[in-house]
Length: 130
Image 1 (cartoon, rainbow, N blue to C red):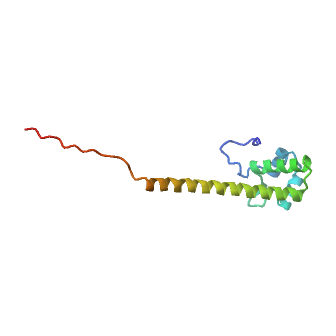
Image 2: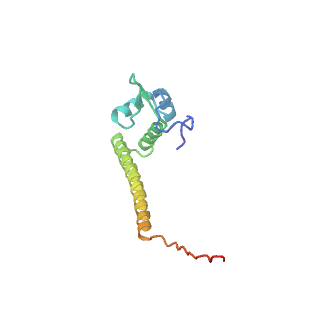
Image 3: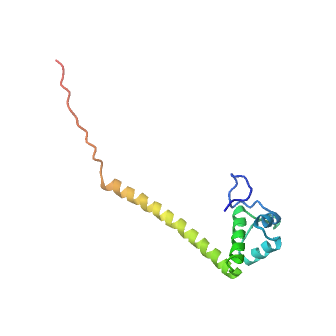
């Protein structure tokens, strides 16, 4: 999904959009974003004064919520469950990647330990000149 118009060096999860901008980017009314926040569907960052700040990732999630609701007919409780499950799957994928890296490292170490160096050094004594 295309990223909203923010500089490339700003992380996707940086809370940069006020609610009115996020609502416009998501094609929704700001009140809808407030309701989704209350329901726990999308949880924006907060300023010191309590104002909501949405990230590019939040805006993408808002668009997905809208798609699931309007195109697929999923109710908000179902959408919340889908979001939770997708988050869980993402966490599991990350853990599998970590474990695969650990396994590769352990395998390389095992190979290194079980195959001692096979380098052969040949020494030949030089004859002395008389």
